[in-house]
Each structure stands twice: as structure tokens, then as C-alpha cells.
Length: 411
Image (cartoon, rainbow, N blue to C red; front, top):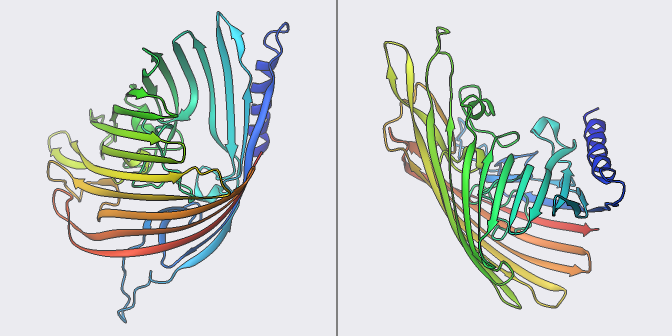
């Protein structure tokens, strides 16, 4: 039923654009790819979608005989990331051009809905002169389309990089040929913040204030480009306390990144650094927790648990069937500025992880629209005990090696 509803919605959207103006025909371009992958892990992992979207290796847990119950690996085959995309040709409107994009895959929105149709993107873009507006679901501004990991494994290298798509309104201005900036207001649907009720979009929605992000970029993405993104969001974890009385609680957090990408005729080099207070909704380490309690009215104060990451990637673009890529990234749990009352609530990813290190070399063999990719994804996580400021101590590193063979046919 859900699949039929989504397909019907796509058809209605496309039809409304195609017949919006009879004197001008708008064409629909269909594209996508079929993906088939085989993965093998040397250790149990913390992951999403039946283990396909890898986060980090599972911690060491010893049984009564001193054996690690997570030391054994596993394997699986996946085709859920196969994708279908519908894009319209430009439609003349008010002196500008309007286009629309709808893209779906079969990943599902939660693990129990895997293989079900999921909306990735559904947005319209209106361009007039040096200005453009995007309305709909699209990449989070912190996911920079001119500088992101191109690893073969799905998940965009989280949690050492960012992955998030959000309903939004984005205004972009091209100030010069090489300098542009945008401001975005967004909400949450699939990529949600954490809180007392678990992952939910309620915490952002109940503030009545969207998340705001600003993006500045200079250069030509086909040559050399660098930029910065900065944003802030406010969450309201609770509206009522344990006695059912209304409380005025909120936490405001900030995030930012800087990046650079250099392309030559044969190679591309990328570098990105990220800082995030409560990056949970972007699949980063960190979150927030209760830092103080007003005993008179049972009202909480909150403090963010921050993380920082840095990653780089080298990708070859030789005019030959065989190319290669190398990704390396490091994520660090930076803890909180204030002490966290752990008995009152911690809403974070990897609260007992000090750092995550990932190295992933790959080889790509391609012929026209067909590719075969082989990748070795080595991920380490340092588990330990967090102190009162959520700084993880007495760590022990565990590692997982993921071997992936990936077949991809684009059309």
C-alpha cells in the first residue's frame, strides 16, 4: 500500500508539472541505477538496514568464560540501494526556469521497513538570473555536494562524515562567477534528533523554529573549490515533566564545517573538517544530556555533547577502465562543557566511544555505465568509560574489516 501511494504521488507530481502549461511541453527524464553488493565483516558491527550502513564495530563484551560475544563476523547480499530518479526539463515561469526532481530507493525509513520504497529527494528548484530557490526534501546543507566521500560502501562514511536529507527552503545567490552563498531553513523527517522519546522530529518541531544554515563557497567545482557551512538548531526535549506539568526547556546547539576540493585531469583531492554540537541527526557522534535540575518546578537544563571529525579522499579519473580511491577519516568525541547528570538522561550516539578511525581503499573497474567496485573498509572504535563530562577514558580499541564487492549498472 505504501509503495502504491508513493508511486501514485510521483505520477501526480510529474503530471502536474507536465500539464501545467499546455503551450509548453515539459519532458520527463528517467534515470537511476541497479546496485548489487556482497559484504563480509570480520566482527559484529553497529549498523543500520540489516548491517548494510556501517557505523563502527561492536564493543568487546565478555561472557562468563571470558569470550567476546561480538568477535564473530558475518556476511550478506544487498540490492536495496537500487535507485530510480525522475527529473523534469526546465519549465519557463515568471522569467525564470523551474525544474523538479523525485528520487526513491528501497532502503526503507527504519530497519523493520527495509526493502520498502523510500523517498530520498522530492524538490523543486526555481532559477532566475543569479538567484535560485529550492523547496522540498533535499540534501542537508552540511552534506556538501561538491565535496563528499565517494566510497563504495553505503552511508557516506558516517560517523566520520555527514549524511542527512531534510525538508527545506533554500535561497542561493551567485554573487560572482566563482562566489556563491545560500541560506536554508529546514525541518526533520527521516534523519531525526534524539531525546526522551527516542529519535523523533518532535523536538525540533515543538520549538516552532526551523534549523538555519548558511553556506558560502568560492571556486569552480570542476577545478578548485573551498567553502564553509555553519548552522544552529534548537530542540525542546520535553514539554511536560513527570507530574504532567508544563515546562519551558530547550537546548540550542551549533555546527560548522570547512572543506576544499581540487580536481585535475586525472585526480581529485578532498579535505573536510567538521565540528558539531549534537550531531546525532546527521549520523555523527555526540548528542546532549541533562546538566542541571530546577527542583522547585522539576525543569531540566541541557548541555551538548560535541564531536569533531576530519576526513580526506583521493580519487583517480584516468581515461582507462581501472581507477582507484582512498578514503581516510577520524571522528573524536569531545564531551560536554558541563557535567552531565547521567541518571536524568543522555541522548547521544557513541557516548562510550572516544574516537572512530576509518581507512577504505577501493578499486573501480568500469565499462560505459557498468561498474565493479572492490573495497576494503577498515574501521576502528575506541570504547571506554565516560566521565561526568562525557569524556571517554580507559579506552580499548576494537576493529572490523569489511570486504565489499559492488556491482552497479546506471541508466
